Structures are given as structure tokens and as C-alpha cells.
Amino acid sequence: MHETNISEATLSELSGKLRAAGLRTTKQRLALADLLFSGGNRHITAEILHAEARANGLAVSQATIYNTLNQFHEAGLLREVMSSKAEAISILISAIIIIFMSKAKAG
Picture 1 (cartoon, rainbow, N blue to C red):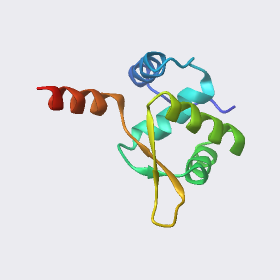
Picture 2: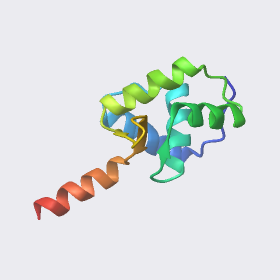
Picture 3: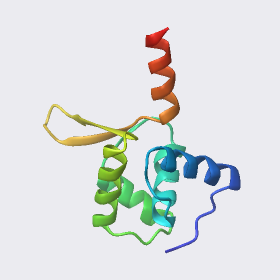
Picture 4: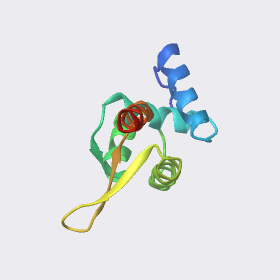
């Protein structure tokens, strides 16, 4: 896999986010998390993420993309929403926003 140019601070933040969600930090997960989290909240599909990964020199398969998105979803890092055409679209929700919203509702 191509080495990514993730800064040390970003790498530390992403590693912490993955560990807090109960996921091991692998090079592929960190690289894909960087692509997902660096763009802010957005709608993304597996196909879009795969194209972005390839454009950034990451040698990951479509199956790895689907597996990673499913793992991130199960860990609470992504939310799946059905579009009007009944297509599954994953929407990124950063852990910080989830915590902030939970505290705001509680307070």
C-alpha cells in the first residue's frame, strides 16, 4: 500500500478515534479514516471512497472499502441513511460531533 502523508497530529487523532470506537489501527483503516474524516461531514458511497483512495495512491480493493465502511458503521463512526431511491449512503458523523450533540441534549 502506498504510504500516506498523514501528519503526526492527524495520525494521533485518527488512531485515538479508532481505538475509542474499539477498532484496531491498521495502515489501511488510518488511510481510509483520513480520507473520510478530513473532508468534514459529507455523503459518501463505497464507490466514491474507493475512487478517492485510488486517486490518492492507496492500493485498496473494493471489498476492503465495503468492509471498512461496515466496521466504521458498526463502531458508530458512520451513519447509514436510505436515500429516496433506496440506495444505502453512508454519512460521516465525527465522534466529536456525536459527543457534543449528546451533551447538548443532556444539558
